[in-house]
Every structure is written in structure tokens, then in C-alpha cells.
Image: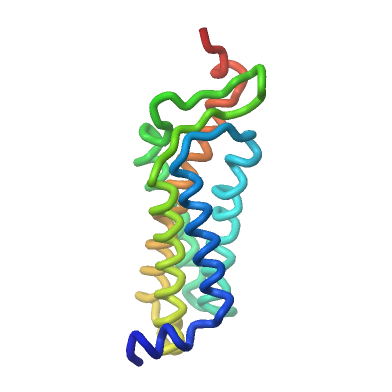
Length: 173
């Protein structure tokens, strides 16, 4: 299958989704004030949705689903631990008076969002061309590991924001 065929056979709903994800990522490049719930919504949703999507992609029952989920969890945890010290950007803080997080703009969320989209698109396209690939342990474990990396970054960011908003951390001179 050529790249043109792949693109023309992509369901139409994928392109508005990509546009919405681009818009969401571009909004993250600007400094903004948001509630803690809003700041945590995407990371927490992805932490739930990614293993569910992985299970759906591998099909059920899958003999290597448990191993794939374990690999995803291990990669998520490893990436979260690796990113935890750099999850907050300079100047980010929580205002107890307004109960809002003051977030700095960054291109990192856009890169993570596009990375997740690209990974899922590539997995779907690969399986469309070769449906039997999902039955291969190497494919499942690689997909799980790659899916765990952005999940870990999101988890580190969510944890840092939650910690920032905890009462003992939100006192500013």
C-alpha cells in the first residue's frame, strides 16, 4: 500500500480529530491559568484510555495482552520517574486565592499529543496492511512500550501539578 492509498483510506473522522489535537497542542504553547481539574483531565484520561486502546488493538482474548499491559505500565512508570524532576517549568505556580494553576507555555504538550496520534495512526495503518501482526508478541510489546513513553510524561506532569496544588506547597511570598 502506498502512502497516498494509506491517506485516502484513512477514515474521514481522523482528520478533524488531528485538527482538534493540533489546536489543543497549540493552546498549550501560551501561558494560561487553569483549574487543577482541567490541568489533570488530559493526563488522567490518557492514563485510562491508552491501556484500554491497547487491549482493543490487540484483540481479545490475546495470549500476550497481560505482558503488553505490564510493559506499558513499566514504561509509563519508568518515563514518569525519569521526567519527574523536569515536569514543571519555571514560573509555574498555584494560586490559593484563585484556586488556579498558572502554567507556562510549552511546545512539549504539542509534541506529546502529536506523538500519541502518530503512534496510534501508525499502529492502525500497520494492522490495516497486515492484520495478523497484532498476534505477534514483538508487535504487541513494542506498541505497549512506545505507548508507555508519552503516558509516563503525562503522568509525571499530572503528579507535579497535583503536588504543586497541595495546600502545603501553594504558599507563595
